[in-house]
Image (cartoon, rainbow, N blue to C red; front, side, top):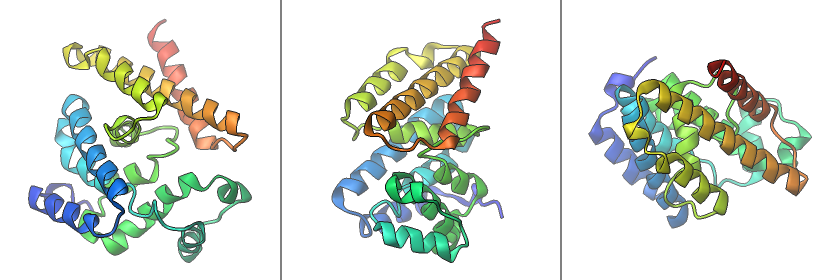
Length: 216
């Protein structure tokens, strides 16, 4: 079922208010900022996808504050296999569980593009769609993020003035910034001694190959 054309401003407003009552104040503030950033990015890269981007941004962290045990129970309920690395590095689980619960708890927003953007907003993956890339980046550089890597990446993206670029330059800029985001994530995980998601490595390597091909 594709509900893209049915996602209205009124639906987004109602969803935002509903989420306010299900999240901590800090998580809700982050969620709203991710929606705003997704809209800003969408205006540059996918203006026809704004309802999808905003809905995915609002829904991306609906299970973020669930316990590890609850996350694992949701995955088990849907028959999703988990590994020990999921338990020792649980920060990515909420992307999977949120995507699984959207059709059940928020059926009006169960557009495949919304679900996939939520599913891949933490690790990325090979073959990311534009919606997946933009929600992933919006989550990394939204204005609620004050970690040095997030601030630096935000400045890297907007400091280059992508609005002044032509379409080809803007696409190249997005690839470069995404690679930097993956590099920062991978480095942080290595420093923590934590597992690195295979999907993150594949996403990063694909973008690096695209950059090299474009400069030949």
